Length: 348
Ligand code: PNS
Image (cartoon, rainbow, N blue to C red; front, top):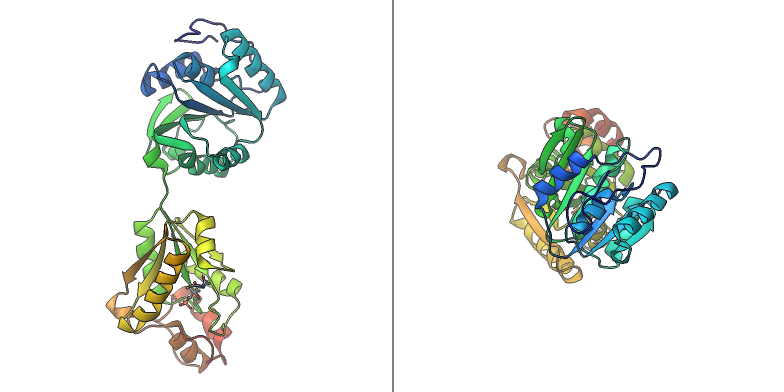
């Protein structure tokens, strides 16, 4: 393996340690053809760096500095040797650590990169690869890009994000623009005691607008819960199982703190009628005072759900009435059983 172009062009790289799968010269050349041949400064982050060949190629072609992240001791020694051979040691920092954790610590230090190279061992879990892609935008400067190499040449290798994927034999390489990786996350909070068809309609419509919706099952201090939050969350999981960009969490503490932890940009709420407006307006203003960057977005309930409330469902189920048509079919039996004899409780 050699450095292909730039100031270190032609330098022969050190032998590849066992268990490290380097990016072949051909794939490296194609990646840099796609990125643009030469660069004018900026920093590059080489995750799962292996031999460091990709990051060294970027330095040779004009990047000012590179951070190499690698867990394996023998690979680290190879990166050092390769930097020495290319005369690039002064422009490199080597971190021996896990990629995800290093990304978080670099974020904490406010670092930003023009290029992130991700060439993980092909056997890493999809969730780890997804985690790297989700964290990337926070580390990319505007206009920055991520190069993601994978052994999965199927359609799903782009992790559900856009990107420009090219295939080379058994390898696929996707180049993502920063804007293609930014996820718009919304939190949909409520007591959901129990979830109704009206709630589900709002959740479905939110999921079609945002990249990811986290349903936050909270406890309204002014209300008496009919069921514990974990059981309410279980019912929601059951009826949202077909929505792959929706997750359900029990929320303790303040909604704004929960939203911040989830990386959410918006709170989504349903509005049924003018009667909902006053309290929603008050909550939105308070939340805005606590966390001004978080927007509250209201979705108007469908007309057929405008009369529907959890408190009505609780009362009807509690008194042995028919709740079919008011809540999803798949939780009918559970709601009938769990809420029977519990006609009092929260008001929503
Ligand atoms: O379905 P509900 O009862 O109207 O939901 C109310 C909920 C849980 C969304 C609200 O009580 C809430 O946000 N609780 C979290 C605590 C908090 O942040 N309170 C300040 C909000 S102004």
